[in-house]
Image 1 (cartoon, rainbow, N blue to C red):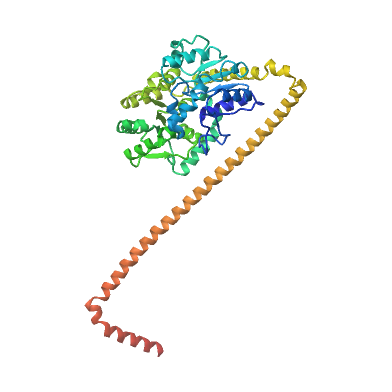
Image 2: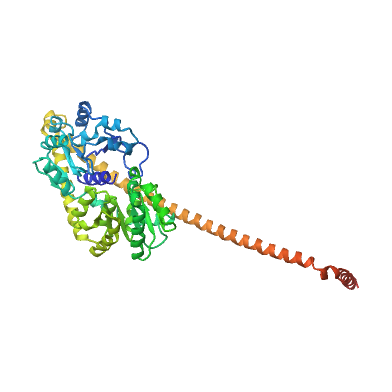
Length: 478
């Protein structure tokens, strides 16, 4: 979802009059905490000639990815959507990602690769598919050298652009003031330490196999950072990040806070930005740490090419570790490297050139001769439409700013209310403690009185006390 949101933002900035639609194999039914409130993704549906023709008729250009989407293992998508493997195989989303719309339809609706990753060495069958499909593509971009090598070894001969991961410009989507507010919110609800930094960590269900070693490594790094708390984030719900967080909290009782299943992209990023550092298998958790200048370690315990590729792309392959025992050393190395703002800026420039190229191809496709010759869009009508679109875009931006301001005000009010409620609970807790203490003291006094009443001297002196009382009453009357 971070890739989709960044891509939408960058293309919208370059193509303000364009309608940008987002697709996913099954769409995103229901709520998705990572979508940022944007329009939900549409379902691609099953790949077939009819569906390809339908999309080609509706779109001027199709952009595939990014992410690790180029493989032929459709059945692996099933658990992520709660579907049966047979259903994902039947839908064949890999056909959209590799074959696209087919050679004839792509003459009118080009298909481009948006800095994708190729997670596995292609099988012989996939090699043939890649050769045929990419031979006609006007622009093919991959995000790491490993993916580039795999295409070359498959015999793909055309131009292939090597582009950094598109999310390296996430700071445009997630400005500092927004992240500051989200971090304050996390602190106010107890999902992050009340003050100071935390070591932010992340893992998925597969990393539970290394839990004891990872817990030891995390604790060691946290101690070296000044005995800071450990905050665990969940970036991949469909990969079982919650199971890893549960297991880590049990392994390190009392030391772990959780930026849990309620957290959106902004919350996860805020936790990383406000941290003493990040350690995890999440590619984009590491990208966030790199972009915002925090120390980080890439947990590549399963040997994932996307993680190795990212570490190499930032010129620090030693930050990707395949053993928990190497975590502390890699973290120290990352601290030594420090924030690398100039290198980040250089990589962002390459990402900008990448989105510029995609935009140029999209504009060229939308203005293809076939449409102009049809007479359906006279030049005056196009200019009029463009001006109307620009006016609508300005109004949309103004409304967006207003909604953002209102959302910020609401978030601040919610935080104030939460703090007030927390204060009220604290007052109530103290009152209950004082009441309990007074009850204990009262019980002690009652026992003292009872013990006094039971003394023999007290009982034997009763006639004298009565006589003394009678005498006092008569003297007062006199």
